[in-house]
Image (tube, rainbow, N blue to C red):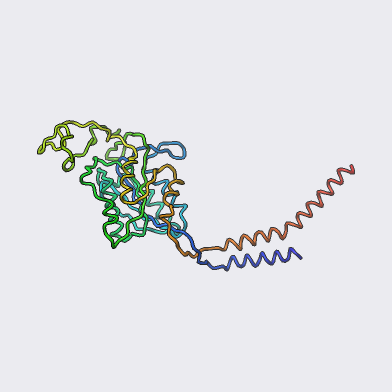
Length: 331
């Protein structure tokens, strides 16, 4: 009799699971705008894949970003852009991560350093222009995730740097952009690969290939510049030594950009840590989402079905075991 009621209950629960509509359920969601640095220093191979083989910073960003996106709750959205020199380009506005995941996945996988249209890298100006871009296309409620190694090429003249705090907080009629800067690359200096027109590596950049200091605008303190000539050599007439042809994550510099803009900072090391960083409570939004809860009655139906047959099978097993043991003892 007990088994019959369990079977009836299991059938009713299974029918409930089939007919049960989606129900409004409170949950978190996240809206992001991913902006990726595709300048040449992002080709430095100072990360490793799961097999221990070296991969570039850009490939690491793409792989970890996709793994983090896969873990986001449905209802979250991701938009995508790339930048080189000082100019960010919007590829698409945020799309839902579950229904549009195939498109998001393929677009991120196909990002390549050869998409860059200029060789220079002006990180602070690119960040400033990205903040302005988000306001222009009315994505102010999204969280900016800005991936870069922070290497300015050529080095930036701080006298002409934009004021990130002014961009974020000067206008009272618009809200500041929430976001996080993701620093990419190892702390140790590495050589930057050089490629030919066919995309084949032909070596590495040398000190002669890369400006070792800024030559833009006027110096702040000419007395500190060797060989200073006001008209003909405002940055000196002596060759400069430096390590701008080598690259690492400019962590202190990136933190100095994040602070006035009130952005978070995270050094990219693993997909799990990236996910934790971009799902900080500051970036979450509440949503009421139509949620499929049919798995609950379906699971209960399975349990009841199991219980309906378990006692009979268990007793039968015990009875057979006793007969076998009795036979052995008699023999």
